[in-house]
Structure formats: structure tokens, C-alpha cells
Length: 446
Image 1 (cartoon, rainbow, N blue to C red):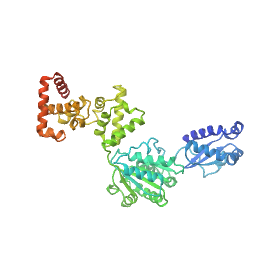
Image 2 (cartoon, helix red, strand yellow):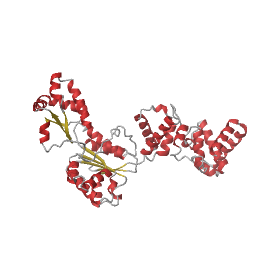
Image 3 (tube, one colour):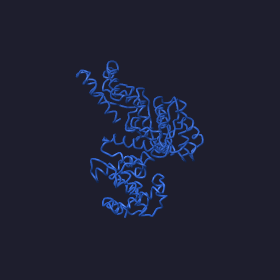
């Protein structure tokens, strides 16, 4: 209601520009939102004459202003306050009776969802459902490991439908919230029949983490009835889950069967390229210039955290916080990134056991490269030197066999490794610069 009170004020501001001052003050000045029930908005006036004028003269103008403000086709009703209070069917809203915390996240849209081979099918299915709710893929069942974008797509579907000119009522809820509402009803704190009627009034039901229904038998039965009602009446259901329906142990078979009757769509972990694009998207959403962070820094985060979109975002947020609060800088390089994220990345700290991987990471950081560049096949001089130095330090510190070192560096044969290590060994004696590099690296490793 508070939200729609603000909307009504904006509508009045638009109307004030189109209606003469005497008429506006006489009829609109004391009007307010009495109740909002789904897509129906009840506007209260102080007199029967004002309600009559609203309905006969200004209704189309008000509806146009309402659509301009909300981009939604609400059904508007106008009547005197006393008449509303006498009508028992219209209850004054003092706030939502159910799912008080349920709302769509405006940041989660299809425009902000980064598409890649790992999620393309799920995105396409979500777009089809959002464009024609209730007509195809009912239910749409999106499943994946945690943190790969299921919740983003769920909210994107809801936001797309809500922004569509053909108004559809959308209810989004986590499974835990759904269970809480049921338990309150079962305890008598709320009316279970009223809850069911409330949910049935929606056109689209979006439920996150449906695996939460496991071992909640009474709630399952309650949800089963609602599920059938939505499908039978061509109302759209979208569910997200961390596994396939057939893998849900502890849920009634009849629900598992119904979860599988629409479309099952999986989201896989993003590729390295998609992970980098996700990081770029997050930076843009935060108003950060992409030129202010090195590509190698993004690649490093993506290599370490590509298994989860949520972890990618968490690592990026930690990096941004570090460069604001602890090491202010206008440009973020790889070294700064590794410093900021060493406690959450798989980078061994100074107290950890020395390993080939640690040496490669430290050499990469020293030269502002990624570990992948150090172990790769690039012939760029700086990268080749870093690669040979990493081989030398690994051999010198760990006495690792040449063949194993070769495998660590892209499958190089032992003679190539021996040649590189011997070359650095000679330079350590003849080139003060190389000698200093080896000293610096060994100091860091200690």
C-alpha cells in the first residue's frame, strides 16, 4: 500500500498538468488509495459527486496516467469512502496478509543475465514462458548446483511478465517462505483456505529452491492441490531446484511426476569466457569503467571461481571493497587482485606447504601474469622468461623430476625443461637482474 500511495501521488502530479486547478482541487485533492487487490485498485473520494466525475469524465485520463507511471494495466475503481467501508467484499489493505517479504528483485532481468553455452537453453525456455505464460512448458523446472543463476532467471521471468502490457499477477516465493505461511495457517495464526484462495488469484507462481519441500508431507499435499489448480487453469508455474525431480528423495512420487511433466532445463557451470563476461557485467552494473581493471585480473578471478556465479560476484565485491578501504587505487592490476583475494582463493599463504602450484602462482603474481599464461605456450619474451624461472625455482626448491615439470607446463618434454632450467642457472651467475628475481621469489616463498 505504501508503494501504491507513492504511485498515486505521481499519477496526481501528471493529472495536475492536464486538469484545470479549480477542478483538480475540488475533486482530486482528497482522493487516496483505499485498497489494492491484485490488479484492482480502489480509489476513495470524499463525495459521491467526485466519484461520479472520476468515472464519467476523467477515468480514461486517469488510466492513461496510471499506465504511464506503472507500465501496467491496472483495473481502477472510484467510489466514496463510506461506500467502500460498507462493502464487506472490499477490505482495506493494512499490508499484505501473506508473503509479506515476497517481491521481485528489479536488478534480475533478462538484460542483466549473461548468456553462455552453459545456460543458453534455460534462458531460452525462460523467455518463452515469460512471453506466453501458461501456454508452454508448464511447469518450467530449472535445476543446477547452487549459485549458477537459477534465482536470477526466476526473477527475470517475473519482471518481464510484470512489464508486459497484458497484466499478469505474479507471486514469487522461496520454498521456505511458502512452508512458513502454511505452518502459520496450520497453527491457526492464519486461515489456510484464505491462503489457498490468495495464491489461486495469481496468474504466475514462481517458487525458488523447491527441494526445501523434502520431508514436509502436509505442505507437499497442500502444494500438490495448488499445483494442479495452476496447471489445469493454464496458469504458469516455474520452479527452481538443486537437482533433477527424480533425485529428490523424501518428496511424494506424485509431485515428482508433475515436476517432470513440463520442461526440465539445466544450468551448467559457466565457461571461463562466460565467467569473464559475467564479471564485466557486474562491473558495469556497479558503474565501474572496464578500463579501470586489467583483463588478467578478471581472468584470474574467473579461473579460480568459474564454478559459481555467486562466488564470482562475491570475489569481485571483495576485490572492490579491498581497493576502496584498504588499498585505494584507480586501477586494479593482477597483483592487487591476488593480494585482495588470497584468503578466499586457492592461493597458498606464507605458512602453507611449498608446492609446484604455489611457486607458479607466486611467479605469475611477480610478473603480473596469470598462472595459465605462465604454464602456457606463449612465446612473448616476458612470459617465456617467467615460465623458465618458474621451472628453475620448482626444480631448485622441490627437486621435482623434469618429466613432472614438463607435464605442469603443457606437456613439454624433459629435454626442453632441462634446457630452460640450465639457461636460468647460467643467467643467475651472469645477469644481476635475473639473480635478483630469483632471490625475490625465494624470499616470498619462504
